[in-house]
Amino acid sequence: MSITQGQFEQLTEMGISLWQSRSRDKKSDTVVTQSLSYLDIDFAALTSQQLFTDILLAMELTIGEVSHQGDHLDLGLFNWYFSANEPTEQMQWQGQQLFTPSIANISKSPALKKQLWHLLGKQAQ
Image (tube, rainbow, N blue to C red; front, side, top):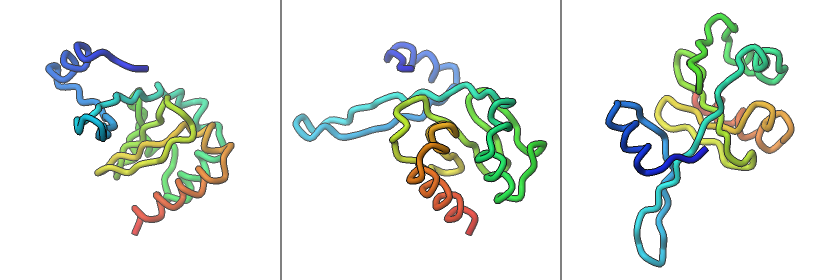
């Protein structure tokens, strides 16, 4: 879901920060900003997916330690956002925030699973 510049400004004024992807337009040497949207999480459906429970197990977390915050999960040490954009996008770790495609998309792709395990392992060190 994209938002307009006016909507972005209103949300910013209200103190709601949005994560944005920025890229540089080489022709005009200007910064192009693309707002990313995140999925509202169906926590009950998410907890029934084997990959998600395996991730929690590997991180030594229980379902009770995960706090559902609407558009992200608070896992204590970091917040996890699931992007509504293309499932082939790269996963990113920024500060204490993890941005990934949905668990359903990750579970279908060995490359995405590998990338997720690599990111999580790297942060656990």
